[in-house]
Amino acid sequence: MSPAEQTLIVLAVVAILFFTEVIPLAVTSMGAAITLGLLGIIPTKQVFSGLANSTVVLFAGMFVVGAAMFHTGLAQRIGETVVRKVGTGENRLMAASMIIAAMLSAVCSNTGTTAALLPVILGICAANNTSSSRQLMPLAFGAGLGGTITLVGTPPNIIASAALKEAGFAPFSFFEFAWAGIPLTIVGVLYMVTIGKRFLPKTSVEPLASAAPAKDDTDKQGRAKSGDPKRMLLTALVLTTVVIVMMLNLKRVPLEMAAVSGALILVVTGCVKEQDAYRSIDWVTIFLFAGMMPVASALDKSGAGRMIADFVISLMGDQPSPMLLTIALFMLSCILTQFMSNTASAAVLCPIGLSIAQGMQISPHAVLMAIALGASCAFMTPVGTPPNTLVLGPGKYRFTDYIKAGTGLVLVSLAVVVFILPIVWPF
Image 1 (tube, rainbow, N blue to C red):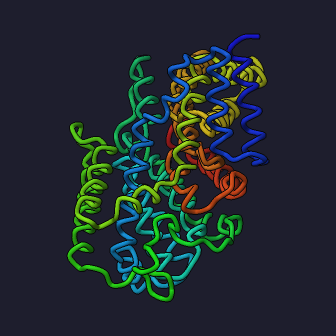
Image 2 (cartoon, one colour; image 1 turned 90 degrees about the vertical axis):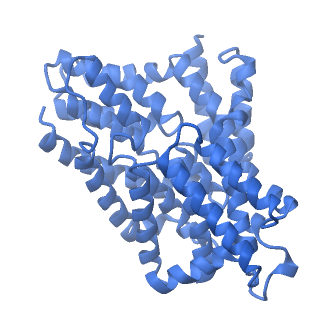
């Protein structure tokens, strides 16, 4: 049995265990990485490499920053202010958070955007006395949609543009993605506030319970007391600085360094106690993401991802219609990115789509745009994209919650892509 086939079997078992949750998600994730190491599909030194991934460090840092916001009372203060401005309506808050996340993600990391907005949304939910499970998943989805608006919004966009240039075609311009990305974002927000919200869990969630203030620091409603105004101001300055640094995307100060630096400052200055900082880190999120990193690598390196792509394309016949090809590649890219890196998905599919388009003598721009957009529609699993993983713990979501809420959004995105692509990028 080839490494690719073994990887696909492991992935199938992981998908079943994720869906049924007969064992914890983090255990399934780490078990998959260990299994791939024992089978020799990935080097043993790579099995736990996900724990050293920069995104994992970013998660930990922002969890601590979020904890400081609750311990100082800043989150509640922001929440009360926003509620007065936006109102207490679930739809208004959902739409506002998704739009803000999309705008930020268009020009900076969607992971950094979600990490920065997460504690703010939790504070708003606390002030509004509403369940954060109704708001955090739409926040992550908004960040994912925003990445489709510009060339630098997400790595698959750059990969698709580079593939065109390498083959001698005109690459995508910086704002060319906006022709599809802006309609996708608008329709995505409208879908979530009308139909998608019906599939969100209605559980009663204690906002960031692991990072909540100690009992002697809370009022009868469990919220932080007024706190020290100086520490509240310092926490606000640290959060603002971290967000600005993330938006600037400085090479010398990567996202994880900004997040951890902010967390360290807040611990040293007493804005959050050391033990509370440790408790604020959601370890399910950490191990779930860290375990799936080697699995994603195995899909790419073993050839399993390419095997899936070749199989799907073979089902279309020798001369598929351009529209059928576009739909198939969009869905294939979307499916692959639910379990493997969107960067890896685009890297696998772009050369395939390009060669098929050239063989059919059609313009490759629509084909590669479909692949890039599909790679950003990672809405159906908590491991499809870091923003989804980041909200998993605070939102107390189950694996099936993502399937319920994300499937419809994927289908709506497909409809938008099918309508837009032939108009903007004719075959």
